[in-house]
Length: 78
Image (tube, rainbow, N blue to C red):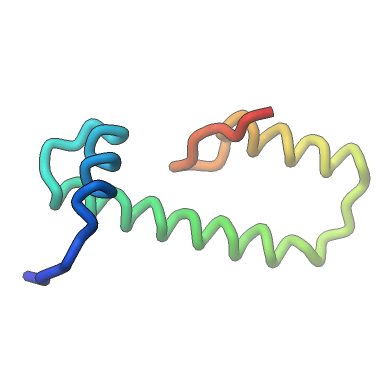
């Protein structure tokens, strides 16, 4: 689908460099995929808020997220 967008050139340049993308189209598509994955993960984490956790399970979950086990995300700093 053809779409005309007014994009921030600095943000596009940063994303292209960070993601090693060659085109704006490739960059925007990857950013949209990543954003969709992020929203899905947020929904999962929010829905699991009803889950009763213990300190050990919370620590394991935090370590898993920090290690980058969530698909499509970079590891979080410790």
